View 1: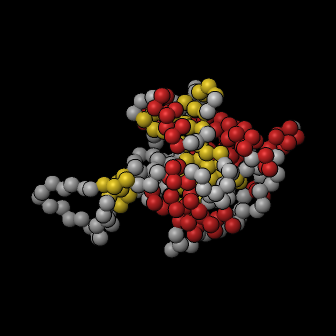
View 2 (view 1 turned 90 degrees about the vertical axis):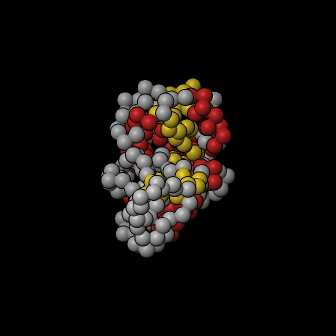
View 3 (view 1 turned 60 degrees about the vertical axis):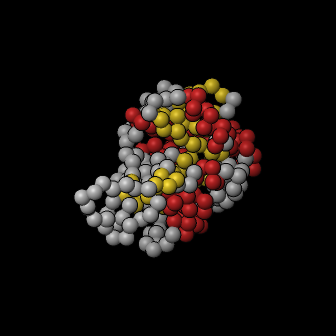
Length: 257
């Protein structure tokens, strides 16, 4: 990994917004070298607050997105990681923008649309959030409690067509693998690569994923998330070589020893 291709670490302002922290992180990158790409990777869960104590969340630890960030770094690319609440450690030397909620993640991703070449949406973003956040603590009562939930933004749908040309990698998590449903989702969300996986892999380093791409046979049989991550980076580079000719990816690959 070429550390000169990554920005020097700098402490994030505690009170800044997710968009402001993302813009600040992007501004510290050097010019992207010839034959290299800018990866924006999302990872981890989101937490949707019910009150100051409780939240709705999920079991994701961010292992998949962190593995993709590591693989892209090792391939010499520039990487910015948008990371939800998790104790999993991001790759050494990788700039990280920490977020909490689905709305935070949306704002951070949106801020990077003019910068990113490859968008990898590996985060387990909540589909719903409480319609109202209770100030302070919601006290226990004898009666049952019903929470009204509302949809969060669909980040992939919201950013489609915004900013520059890019390669997009999405993820689909299902109780059981359903490739027909996954392919329909890939087409509907207009992503180049979609990773279909089951809930059994959540929170672990294992994977049973199948990778779907337009006009290409599905790929599977990955021993772990690290191997899957390397495959996704390779496939993203192949897509980018066709879509982003100004990056000179073909020439750089031919010159590589």
